[in-house]
Length: 371
Image (cartoon, rainbow, N blue to C red; front, side, top):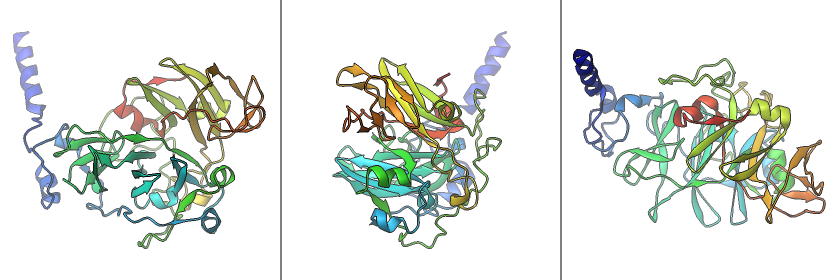
């Protein structure tokens, strides 16, 4: 028994990593030799950092994004195309995944907030953060590295590396910092121009020559696909490429399968002492299916809100639209009552995500699944 314990300790020591030592592999050192990152600070084993193919900023971030009106965007967007919708201080912008799929990062401003709009196609993860860290504005780029199949970003201020999925600095002088998560959702272009017609839309005039509207990851959005460069074991409670709506409250995590959402359209739930409602519409195309996004299958969109309004908990149902049982008011995908007694009322938004299951659960292994 003592021999087994000794061997176990030796084995653990062999594969442990020292967070204060630069123990990168030869290949990683070679590909990052010109970087000014402080490699002596890291919270992860360097063996988890893998090359995604392109060099740093080989997938170019957008630093000076241009925007167009809804009318102008109708010349290049279809009604059911997916966009990241962000609203801050009554200002609204939307970013088509047909553009983000080629850039992954937009350094932008909205409603007096400096924002970072990100999209990792491999994880189907669209996440928006604040670019302010301890009062200092940061700009971000693509590192060319992946960890757990997810985009690893870097900042241009001290070249720390950041995990897109969690917003955490994992290497460099910013180690231990976490980006502030901002509310966003994936919705259809039609829902945006119908309910928020003043929204400004990211222009295809990016300064780069790309085939916007085409999907360089054709066929990736297949329930039988395998995640790209994922070293970790996959939680088999759901297929890895199943879409899920996810949220974290009080450090507890929950996931709602899009398959179930599609069947129910509305889910009333309670989690961590919060009364919630989820809406689902089957009107949004996948950005990761066919070679042309306009030809892709519909995967739908989801949104999550607190169901308590003015101290009263509302229960919702679906009947060719989202209705609350008490007043029969009609609500849209943005949680706004558009007809009925409660017209003009807005449900409180819950910050949530829509991702592939594998991507969420590899970072949140204790996730509870709604059934």
